[in-house]
Image (cartoon, rainbow, N blue to C red; front, side, top):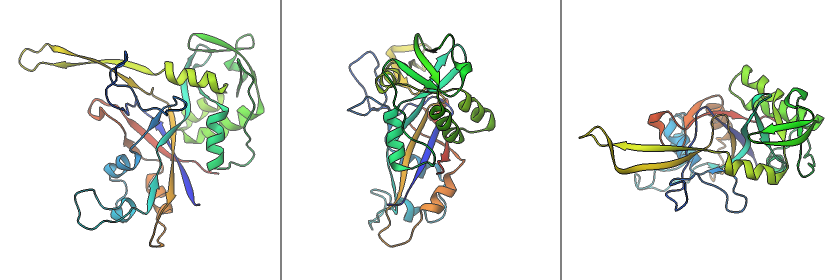
Length: 273
């Protein structure tokens, strides 16, 4: 089955919401039911709205629901976006990116990258791409410390994934500041280290906060890296996957809510083998 991996690098915070909730956060982000890992649904719609696909747009996406009489299935299938690397505060590096074996295994099944394998990580330990990330053999992440060591597998993964960043500065930062942590530790970070931002609505008549108009929204932080799968699903035999990928690679689009206040900007990059 022919497919391509398209990475989404967050240039600003992303709120891909699932609607209101009864918890502390009124409007949380979308998550997998089984793991709690962040996901983003609706990638196809966001890419279509970006107008980056100009030639054969109808063939790529299919007909617009309720707008056309003739049904036409799109020739490209778009998956939901899954988490690949998550930014975390670290005093030695300002911030680093973390991932885990489960995330890397999922990616590697879809896109075999030459020379890479899935590392085994001991509980309460981590492997890193660069010794400058460590202080006394420990890696600081947010408010915790974890035993860590430089490992060639982490260095190789850092080099392979650094190409998904938007420029040379971030590419170098990624290669020097990448860690692979245990699955449970990663799960904890992506569920507790997201950004929660209070929002208000102003009453236009009074210029003050409208009564009861305070709510909290959850965001994926800037520099989060997600990825989705684009697959050739043409029933006519015309393969538009390569031209679609070419049109998207290196471009910027908006995903999720609050676009008019600068949220949801993502940089698109194809992951090469």
